[in-house]
Amino acid sequence: MMVLITFDILIANKKDQKRAELIIKKCRNHGQRVQQSVFECLIDPATLAVLKKELGDMIDMTTDTVRFYSLGSNWKERIDSIGADRMYDPEGPLII
Image (cartoon, rainbow, N blue to C red; front, side, top):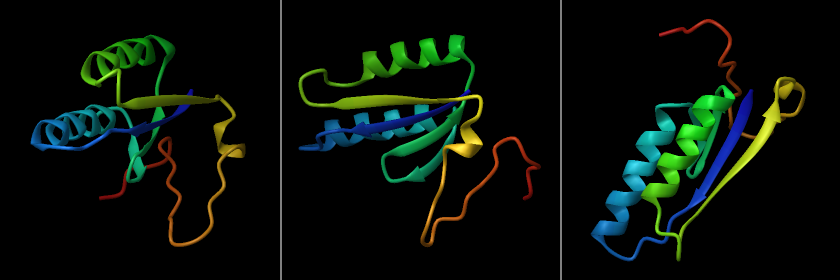
């Protein structure tokens, strides 16, 4: 299923910046970064449950927010884009 993961990390010092970088790295391991704080992740439910737990352990629960939007299996019909963004197909061929 496709899951959109968004986050808002309060960065007030270097420790906060490091935490944000770790969260970005963790999300990048599971999907494609499509905006500064937004990832599209093609992920199975079990892996998503683990990822939620890991991200929950990483954030500061008093200042940070991570949101998960499940787009399901018919996700291609639910994503549209305008502007400079180039859409990608995570199920398509990988071109390097």
